[in-house]
Length: 246
Ligand code: ADP
Ligand code: MG
Ligand code: MG
Image 1 (tube, rainbow, N blue to C red):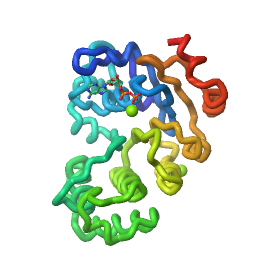
Image 2 (image 1 turned 180 degrees about the vertical axis):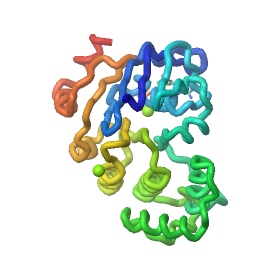
Image 3 (image 1 turned 120 degrees about the horizontal axis):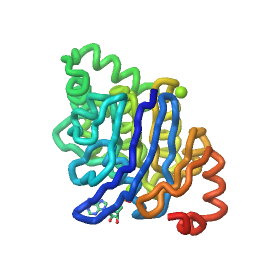
């Protein structure tokens, strides 16, 4: 069965209509990429799926894992298995990486996550990412480099192990290392049961990911969907060719 079904979704922010009827179906095992012009509504779509209350759903529905979650709070969506990383990750002074992820895990699973077992799991996942174990005791994102923020993001994703991971990547400011951390991290996480929705323009990420579907989002609408070859087509034609479809 489908993991995510977004049906005829219309979303406003501060009274301004941003998404104008989005249809998107994601099945288990698929990687979907959303590309599009600046301000098209890509981050709005990600936030609407996650349930960020700033974004108002005016019309349509979001069904996840068989349940209508359109009205559900962020926490309930996280418990249902949706994870979202942020385009501009916030720093969290006073809370260590270890405590942050452990708290998130016990909130999501509804179980008390035992400290020692968690330390071991965290250490193993950090090793996979070549993430210095000392960072477990650092405050979240405080003084982290771009690459370290990405490692922290991928670390959260791999420990929380969502059914759907939504990654909203910046168009600029990611160095080669950070791009590699994201693509490798996604590939390590991804399997035939879970799904990834990634917003990015980085060709290097896309070449390594082998997306199932690529969507072009312009002016609040998905104007074209294709396979991985669409990335090359966009690169050649630019977005102007798609604006006429919006
Ligand atoms: P994209 O991620 O495709 O660049 P966004 O979804 O961030 O686009 O933004 C789409 C439009 O919605 C833009 O015009 C933006 O200014 C507006 N918007 C997005 N988030 C907010 C917000 N929190 N407050 C006000 N306007 C917003
Ligand atoms: Mg954005
Ligand atoms: Mg894999």
